[in-house]
Length: 370
Image: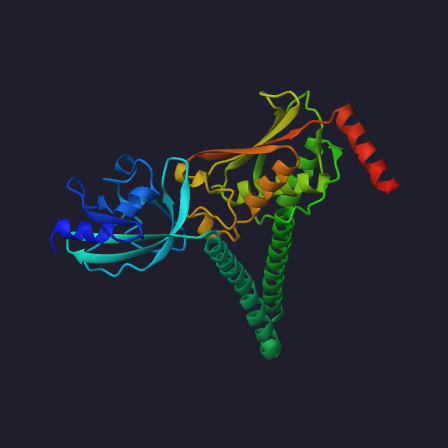
């Protein structure tokens, strides 16, 4: 089939199709053509798509192992499975799609782009949610069951130290399950907008001191913290429990994802850009977060894949919950990271003012009078 015949055939299809061919300058593949349906799917397609490689066009989920869309060289005829991806149709917009591949010859590969309908996307998101949660539940449950069965069957042949070690593992995994359940309940409440907030004036230094002492008590080896509090530090205006949950998650992450024997730095001060806010920054020294990962960092179940995160238990819900709670209380969160050097998370919250306190009193009186 000639190129003209192939183009005529593809233009008759209603499914958007990209034509990939080997790059003339690299050993990777790039877009060399498209059909009419694709030109209607992406505006300014010549500049947006043509001559772009698959890695530049598709944002693949962490589960995907498709070598083509990971930007790797693929031999003609290699099996390329169907998968879901986020298709970058512009600098600031992506769309969830299903991608299928078909080789025409050794120099031509077709990518069939099937846009998800809203219902299909919702079903896929639900499926992804169930898959991740099932995995996160199964891992600790397997450990709990395994060590409990061992204790029941062979307790007479296991010395006391070994029994104590098994029981500690069971407790650790049970605590992990409890945290997962609590996180899922929080996510559910946030999604249904059923999270309630009871605002109080909060002394930031007292909360941070308590969190640091609590974390230090759980570490197998002591960690150095450098605390820097402004002399004119105002009190924060937030829900005390949720405020502590936010800072505990950020400080705990800073410890988990930092290099051994490094210092975690915590600084609290009035927010330089708005004197109506207070800023708390937590900095650690570690592998850092690549810039490509920053935009997804606060998504549900998202975890940066690096040598440290592979060794640390986690569901990818902590930062999503942290940002959602912070935003809901009128604050914000920012992150700045340099790979293999350091990462800083900064949260800002409103400060306590007479107006906010008076509004809280009026709201409380209104609830009591109902």
